[in-house]
Amino acid sequence: MARIKIEWQNNVGRWQHVITRNNQVDAFRAAENRARSTGQRHRLVDEDGRLLDVIDP
Image (tube, rainbow, N blue to C red):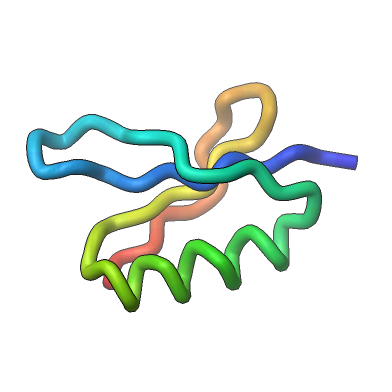
């Protein structure tokens, strides 16, 4: 089972960790909802550090 990290991009461009999920679909849904509500850019990264997706608000 893959562990997916959700991170958001702060005002100076650094990525900050938010939460880790075990399911990619659940992680995408959570990041999409969070990006929409906060207005910040989010991304999904797998446990090996590979970029899976970037969600813009």
